[in-house]
Length: 88
Image 1 (cartoon, rainbow, N blue to C red):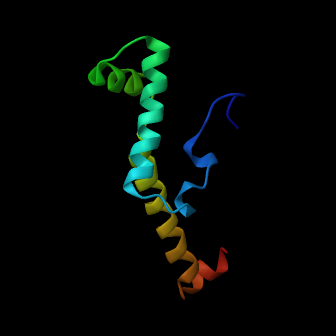
Image 2 (cartoon, rainbow, N blue to C red):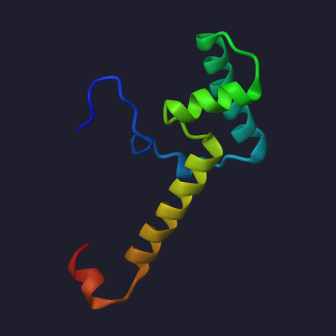
């Protein structure tokens, strides 16, 4: 359990949302804009460094990671392996 206010990328089911490249870019821009306003910076490099220091991953990275995990879970449930069926 995470402390109140801490967001974990496992809390949201973004892998089931149909996100195209434009949606992902818009979400990344919104997050970058927030960092820009909070820290009063304009440089893309500085914003990226702030995001890295606060362990704020890009939306693209989170979506790719979650999609990969989602596909692995789908393979697990589709498996005909007896051991996999035992632990469902």
